[in-house]
Image (cartoon, rainbow, N blue to C red; front, side, top):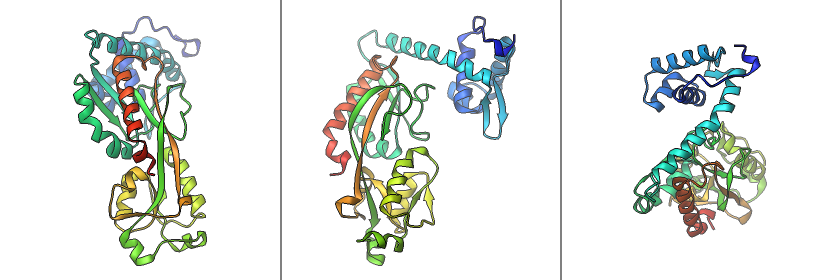
Length: 307
């Protein structure tokens, strides 16, 4: 059939669409296979069979991997609601005994996961032994619409996806340097002095754009000879005395060898948003997890804000 005339999904089974979505998400046959527990060859055969059945080319090979064609984008728009409905039905079925069961994927920044959420995992497990948490930090913030996560913890705003949720707190940010760096080079006390210091910059991820803009504003665009896309790597660099960087207070305050640079104008904070797909937010696993995280954010509000 002509791919420009639309698609009939009637003849294809759900497994074929599930594999199609995995390839669309990972842009790789092997990565999709690992996610689904299938071989690279099996994934490839299913994709080829689906393309033949629909009479449309769904993927093209590009340097970054498998990219969706226009026909593939249209198919994903039709199939993603089916995936959401299937997951919602599975979640409801798992909760028939009244106890939430299953896996909940949480997309969040590595620092939030490691320094805030992970210490609460034992308490969560004791309260919900049937639930398994999966932290998705590599591509934060992940897309709930594309089934990359069930829950997203976002900063600065709710994002463009039509998700449901609420602000659960504020995350503080400040400038940090190691005590060794301060002993060797001192710390800036006036805005014009920032140019005399080594400022660690941000690279890559759009998740760092707001932090990068704030850092550039405060430091008057002081030159930087090194940039990081990972806050974990930035923290290692600050701790080793390479330079000064803007870090979340949740991370920077954790290390006694680091100093938060005063005064108050070198501190900022942003909203923390807890969000989920509107069709999944009331399933027992997602609802239990969101309620737990909301309660912990309220209890930890001073720690998160870094006040």
